[in-house]
Image 1 (cartoon, rainbow, N blue to C red):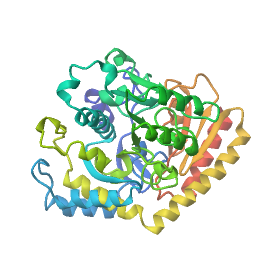
Image 2: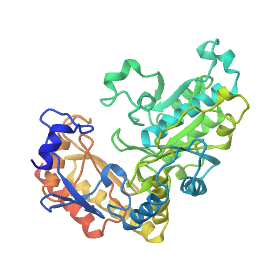
Image 3: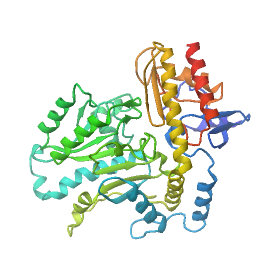
Image 4: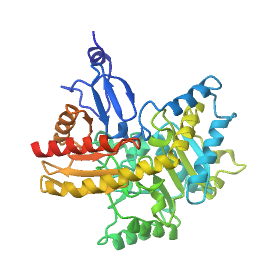
Length: 432
């Protein structure tokens, strides 16, 4: 029995309808941008395996660092212990964040990093006042509401689902999610009204969570930094905690180290994962300002942040993240990413020749996206499966979000490989 047949008997794949599921491709190994299957065929990983492998696959520097750490210390409980990789990584990340960030809280992935942020913000207000009195106070006198964008996606745990758009990802659980104040992303036409809405609800809003400039799983939707800055300024004026979900946008994806660097107003809490370890091991970071942390710095043990994970600050994951950051900050990586940005901009301009087969062509940094103008703009649009199958047959791996086709390649992709990806996309569009 081969690997695919064994898989069908025991595996439940994510985000995949199980009935009549296409057979998965059995990957045996990978190197740089290439995935190799059992038959030796290669595929350019043009989406960085769900946006994580920023340095490509099989990076020997990161692997060697993980190995050296593994034979020294592979895991230790992080309550009552500490270790060099965790402290060094926190120091490194805090030194690269713009703003008043002072503390790092570790978790396991992107969803848990946003879950931590939500709990951190809500309990901040609970800690700031006498919680014994709050429990008997009417709800409207407490800051307990989260503000979020329509089309948002912040993860699959319950808090993260609650602050995400009510969509195909969350529909079976709608009656169990807590209420959130949702607003549209800002445009020149609506930004004044959005600011008014925020001001009107200022007494009950605990926090505003947002994906800066690009909404990932919601369809790679983009909006302007100047307009987001206006909303952040309004939140700051009204003492509303700002949470930047940079799980996808962090580590150079938008053309800057963090998307929040485009704005003057910085978040109070930032969530990081995906490219954090270069795609090698799971790790999440929730960083906060000293002001947020100080709400927990008290003699009252009931105001402790009672949250943690078995693998909090895992030494191997922290080591991988340190190695990945070292590579990311090299001039060579910066130049590669800048070349990708320039190529994406050029290809986006060329794609206009395929209008109206496609629409909403957009780029930011190393990200390029557009919609195929067929059926509804939604995740369940079957055209995405056609795109994946067509491109895989030609040696390129793409995984559209419904009819939203996007490119988010590893920074190590060569100009020739990128041109191959572009050629396959053009061929696919011509054959539509």
